Image (cartoon, rainbow, N blue to C red; front, side, top):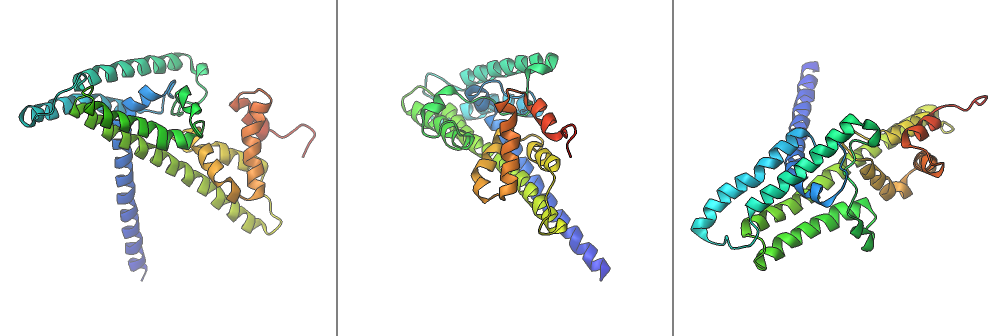
Length: 279
């Protein structure tokens, strides 16, 4: 009986391992393809948001498409356009050099970077559009929509070649998929907080209360590689369903540092440090 249980547990672990591998592979592919578009659409991307391996693969995709699809275009036709994959390659490499100089700068001066996993500041013109200041609207709608329109319209106007247009269309899908993975990981992070919160309440009884320090630490400790903005977007979406006690703690953790003009690190330290002469 015990042997059968161990076999079942092993099968479940193997299945989840396959699922996680597939999920990570899709996330990696989306990150590679979306990297140049993210660098073009945003400013001051975090130094650890894009892994060097992702940037290395991202640099090889346009030349590969240039070679393979360019040869196919010679036989199939349809290579007309002012801007082709060659120009796209040079623009991508220029963006990577700009990002590399930024990473080197914050590597030498870490005090200039507050959060190294942030996905960059959005273009200012998004704020002119409905809900353009929201992370989810920018990442799921506006950015992929802009790239998709460019990839579909510019080849019809003879500005982009069909190969470059295809690269843009796939890039739009990669942007959406990358945002979806980040949002999902942020949701799982919030779900873990809620599970721990509910378990603590059950173990402590009806009058049990999760400690302030534990709640603030859990809420502010974003999962590795996920921008804090994505976590905040998930919290804003689910805030109506959150327990009132947890809502107040999350609100306190986000508002206190800004209200007093402090850095995030100093604000967290103040929240987690008991007041003198207090409890």
